[in-house]
Image (cartoon, rainbow, N blue to C red):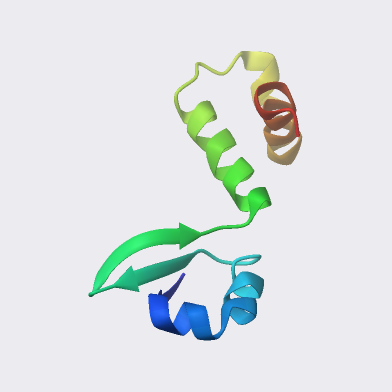
Length: 80
């Protein structure tokens, strides 16, 4: 997790876009978080985890590898 001011982001955008590939980048203005930069892959993973958390998971799905299950949920729900 990384915090950066809006001015710092503007001055070094490419650096923070690279950082967003591996961690969330929280952008602040007047000491308040105003947005978060996140990679599409991490967003899809977070979305899938939220979907799974709210679902009753069938027994056969519990036997699958976690990454395989996440991939199936992403593919089914998000079209990735």
